[in-house]
Each structure stands twice: as structure tokens, then as C-alpha cells.
Image (cartoon, rainbow, N blue to C red):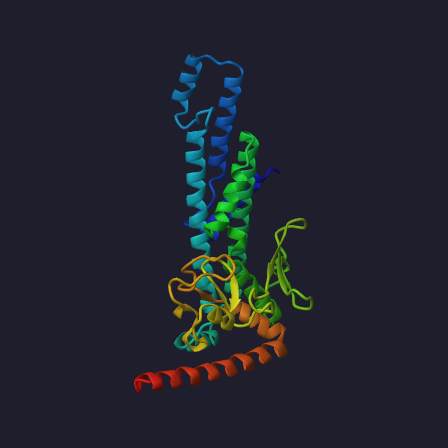
Length: 340
């Protein structure tokens, strides 16, 4: 079965259940744009006269200019950019909402524990996580497929360049730090003794994700299929060790909290978001990425569970460094107040 048919079937099945109001790639419509473009090129190559071309343009006003494909590019990439951005935004917001329920804090934690006495929401959360993984992977594959078709029709590399642009604009779905966080959530649930109903994991839900902390480079792997796999490094680019108390910048890069604060020259107890606006990501050098940094709670819990000794050691080191920094800070404030 061709991917277009598989994708349409997926949309019919999933949207009826859960994703009725969400954005998705209009794969069929974008494919029609490319089909019209290919047909127009074929007509031009066959020497079709101007009257025939004019008649056809009346029948399909959105057909592209075969010489430059200006209209095709405008329709195709503008629509795909909006769809990718909407999908990335929807995915991140839904994952945040889901994970806030799984790792609550403060009053929300108390309410959650009381609720658990009456209702077991674990199954519902796991099912929602599975739907979100399917949602982001199916749309990511649809984008990849349609961009390959674009390059095939036009004999160009514009589709490949557009993928690079998506990475720059942080709309590359399979590179989202929220997907890593969702994978950590799956692994955390998998390691817990939850009572799944028979057949609930018939699609190998947890088999999509795995992690390896035994090698020199800790990594999380997401398998979309037997041939397509994505590896996500769990090494901090600054200390070159396994992430501890990890934060994701708005550019998508992950760092230990202490390392990120050190890179921005701020105290650990002030937090990553206290960095000045001009602070740059140590990897991509993008400005303003600290302000919206997100604490990766599920990933931190996964590392804490799988690497207990390492996590405790790093915790002691961070606390010691925080005490040292606190002493320096208050001494400097005291000297400043005395005018020294």
C-alpha cells in the first residue's frame, strides 16, 4: 500500500478518536499541486499551443508557471511551513500538558495523589502518549515523503534545503526535545509495575523507545520501523558527561542545569532563565534561547532511575557548587552594601 493511502487511513482512524481538531500535513492536496506542475511541464515539452494552456489555466487556477514554478513554490512551501509550525506547536503543548500530570509539583501533586485513590489515570496517560507519538511520526514521514516528491518533480534540491530550514526554525518534528521527553515518559512507565490490559501494547508501544547508558555515549533510540531509527544523544555538550538535571533550550539543544548556568555566567540557584537576553547557545550560538528553557523532568527521572549512583554523585556536586556560589554571592552583596 502506498504511503498516501496509509496516511489517509491513519487520519480517518485517529481523528475520529482524539485528533479531530489538530493540524496535520495536507499530503493529498500538496501532492495534487505537484501533479499539476508535472502535467504542465509535460504539456510544455510536447509543444502545447497557448490556447490549450490558457484553457487549462482556467480549469485549474492554482497550476504553477512551468518555467519558474513561482506559484507552485508559493503554494507548496507556504502551506507546508504553516502546517509544520502548527503541528510542532500542537505537539509540544499536548506533551507538556500530559507530562505535567505525570510529574506534578506543589498543590497539583497533592491533588494527583488524592485522585489516584479513586481513579487510575495511568492507562489513559499512556494511551495519549502513544497517540502523540503516532501523530508526530506520521506527520514527519508525510513531510519527508512530500519533499522527496517535490525534488523528483522539479529535479531540484529545494525539498532538501527546506528540511534544513525546518531545523533552523525548530519545526523539525523528529528533532523536538519534547519527543525525547515523551520517550523518557514511556520508558519510565515501562519500568513501573503498571497493570496493562491484555492486548493494550499489541503495537509494541514501548518497543518504539529504548535507552543505553552502558556505552561511552548514552543514547535514546526511537524506532519508527525496522529500517528507520533515530538516536538522541544524552550527553551534555559542555561537560561531555551524561545529562544531569537537564534543560532544553528553545533551539532544541540539551544541557545540564549547572553547565547551562555556567555558560551564561549566572548562579545555579538563580536558574537558567535568569541568563541575560544576549546570552547565546553554546552549540548553535543562537541568541535568546535561555528565556524559554524547559526543565526535562521525565528525562531527569529516567536518568535518576537507570543511573542511580551517577545521579547521586552529580547531585552532591551540584549542591556543593550551589553552596559555594551562594556564599560568594552574599559576600559580594554585603561588600556592595557597605560601599566597598
